[in-house]
Amino acid sequence: MDSIVVAGNGPLHGQIPIAGAKNACLTLMPATLLTDQPLTLTNAPRLSDIRTMTELLGSLGAEVASLQQGQVLALSSHDLTSHRADYEIVRKMRASILVLGPMLARDGHAVVSLPGGCAIGARPVDLHLRALEALGAELDLRDGYVHATAPGGLKAARFEFPIVSVGATENALMAATLAKGTTVLVNAAREPEIVDLAQCLRRMGAQIEGEGTSTITVQGVDSLGGATHPVVTDRIELGTYMLAPAIAGGSVECLGGRLDLVQAFVDKLEAAGVEVEETALGLRVTRKSDRLQAVNVATEPFPGFPTDLQAQFMAAMCTADGVSLLEEHIFENRFMHAPELMRMGAQIDVHGGTATVTGVEKLRGAPVMATDLRASVSLILAALAAEGETVVSRVYHLDRGYEHVVRKLGACGAKIERIKA
Ligand code: EPZ
Image (cartoon, rainbow, N blue to C red):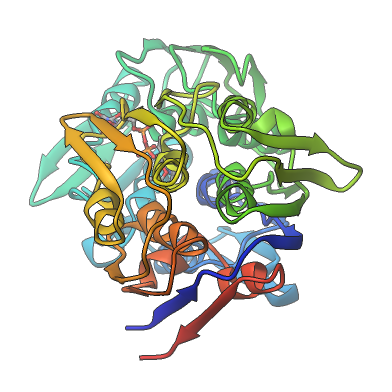
């Protein structure tokens, strides 16, 4: 297993290109299952999760051609050979559950492995299943799989999500595009990735209104066509790299960065003493003072502060002036980066869903271990300003959601290299 070595090396200066959103691409790709026409996605990120979704769609008989070094995905599911998503693939990536709704909607049957838990929480899929049942699906859970049928096709419904769920909203939205009648999804997720999915589905001929709000209305159609759609910018990669100059000092321009995708995060960054400026090419981030100010954060569904940036923001608060409270309201176990940051000298007290971070002057480099995707990159961010060398092991977690971290940070002056195992 590879590791990444980082040595504190002073302020960063330069530009970092931001890729297409992993979490948008992982729901746009299964949309190919809704149509027998070709779907082309541009601005696709080159990540191991995208390769896993490609493998899953391939196992169903869909074709996924990766063009222009992976930045363009040409998908077609004209002739599916299977409607079974095996545990062997699903266990690698929970987003695999997103093939369920589209297969059910177009072909009336699907067998999809339950994803099982993951490091940051139990992450059940009960809301996906309840929403699809509301649309007329008949589900039988046995031997770790969901056996789903929709005899006579899906039928429109009004479904209210008891809690906001990004994935369940995506599954229900895709299924509803081919359900007979008008579907209303209430308390739907508002994430930009949902908006991006709706815009792509509309290009395919779907009739959708209200994406980005809590109520999405879908008028079912008989069939969908093909489309070409650009994957939206990755707001989590954007926020991650905005924290690099915040932590190390300096000034970095994030190319393709859009303020509307990260407004709640930027509000907290500015409160901590960082300047964020919109430029012709994206967002420029400059740390004005010698030390960040401690800021409290509570993660919420969009448009609130994103849970996927909590670990990275904690890394910034470790050396801030003062005490900050970070409340994790979305997942039940998303502080696994805390003990690793403490190995670097951070002062963090975790009680239930709240972490209290008391800023110290400097962290010290140490061997640390990545535990999940966002925790892994928070350790790299913390190491940028630590005294001495940090070795982050198990960086395969990182490859799931970040392409070329070493190259992107190295180009801005970071002392960082990847050590092949
Ligand atoms: C998506 O996961 C993202 N993944 C996650 O990003 C992100 O953290 C999360 O949304 C929240 O924004 C992808 O888009 C591939 P949820 P998802 O359903 O859809 C509970 C990353 O780092 N829940 O909004 O699985 C769930 O346990 C990943 O890129 C149920 O109880 O998240 C959680 O507590 C990590 N039943 C809460 O809802 C369900 O059926 C929100 O989960 C579904 C979810």
